Image (cartoon, rainbow, N blue to C red; front, side, top):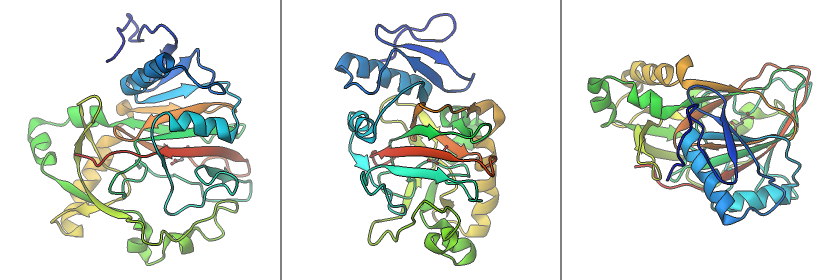
Length: 295
Ligand code: SIN
């Protein structure tokens, strides 16, 4: 249940306050100290804020990996990345690190997390430990708006399409696996073989959010083609959906500060980590929370 809105579109809560970041999505949440175990009533408002704004930011937090994990577990089971090794001390946390000599960044394309899994991640939580002086922002795009702004004809067709989502999507491009492609590119991140974890899945192009009941486009760089279509047939249609779903008016650009924790809802947003800070350092702790099978 969403809290009532004031004239600025910010909801009136009892325990927290929200301030919208962009016209399309995103809000900063104040009144919460994530180093403490949150009372249920506070967590219920934070959940309402996430459902209302899709991406929520908590500024000026000082938390340990254990405290981040405690907060994450309030949302559900922790999802382990099939391709990336977690921190030795906390395997559930992926340290996203780019050092001055690294050229590649992690997450530098439009995507939604673990779309290749049969039950993709419901949410992702990123905590900023070190940020570049400038750059390293993350872009988000609202996939409810992307769906709702389609014509009736395109909506009717989109409703029937299913996507083939592939985790090791680079392999199809040039024959190299993720392990080969990332080798030596991100000095402090380790790619692993997923073993027998399922990393190819078929999902509806339009999914219904299990909590809000709204329809959203569900597309991103893990989509290889449409189910039942050839690559050549899929390409123009996929290009259209990728371009449409990332139109500027659906997006928000998030500027990080050290101590910010961001939580986003992968069921209705795509994101893109901008790689524009060569020679600088960016360090994040990321936890993903398990989700449901899209329908
Ligand atoms: C990701 O794709 O999860 C990384 C996002 C970021 O580092 O901003």
